[in-house]
Image 1 (cartoon, rainbow, N blue to C red):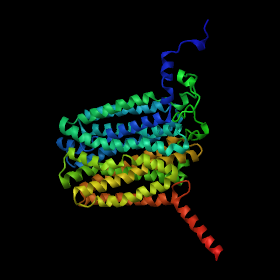
Image 2 (image 1 turned 180 degrees about the vertical axis):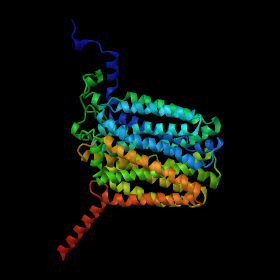
Image 3 (image 1 turned 45 degrees about the horizontal axis):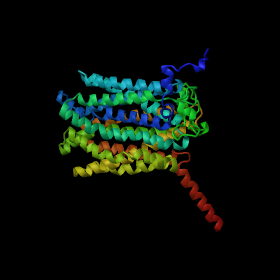
Image 4 (image 1 turned 90 degrees about the vertical axis):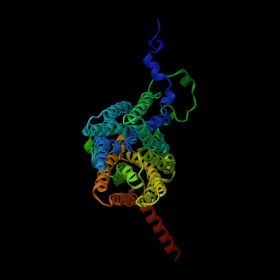
Length: 468
């Protein structure tokens, strides 16, 4: 009589054991999150050059204001759902389930927007899209931190977040071209296709808690493997090397109070908000600016955005890698500081080439901030007892949601109702970024840049005094 252990594995057991090494590796998790971020940004940005023209064709006036409110609805859904998603992700045993739920919501929201008969249904669809996006930005980034060695967190987050620039790069030109040649529904159909491909990747993930280190299910290849395999940290890596945050408390009030006592966490939240203000403001008024000043249509606006975003593709992985070596504070400070003058250059009503160049450089330097910012939040999660990765990445998502809620309102209202609305919108943006420079200088990093400079000068003066 055969023993239970000699019974043939069931279909479910075979599915769990198939490819378990690569499906549970931090490289595959990073790829899936990258694909999720890319899909989210494609879905978000593919209709940015389309919305103003579609609203005009439907007979609406004050198009920039209505566009702003659509972006507001997305950001409101993003921000309001973040609290619940981050708390749920730190109390529920699986990261995969929220990721699958988020993808389903994302697909449904696109179908709703595509078939929306009236404006308020469009707003509801965008709010649902924001809720779906929250899953990948909170749970996906937390999953990367769960399975990645601490010394490599910045690099892996940077690689995953490069999906942000690639998605932003692909969305507008595809949306403009599809709208011009195939009509309003075409961009949404493409977004749904992207979401289904993303869904397959999320299904394939094998999490740390059910990966080869925590199950008796093994494949023949794994039984033969004795040496560590790079990328398969779930099975092979020393647990002390994994960037694991302490077990999180499910009490939201305690989490909020704990994070509010950390200047480092608050400053990271402010930088996330500033990035959201920039994204929301520009998505609202750039298409209108390009149409009003240079007479561009939706397809040409998409090409301008394509040309401007191409330089940002490699910024997240490069600056994520640098943040692992030089520290997060310095990289964030340089990125924000260098973006400000190019915001000013975009105000100039000169040649279109100058505008595109300024937009490209501004986008490049601001995209260099995202990877070190997420690595900074991961460091906060490791340094505060009772705080998990979903909590701290929830800060980024919530603050970005607040900023991208504020940005469209400011941009839309200024552009519609003030004679120099575009200029004033960018003056506002530069002021927000300027405050971020000051806060980053004094409070970001394990040891702030301000303290390092002060300490270095104090030592120098002491040495001079000793010599004298």
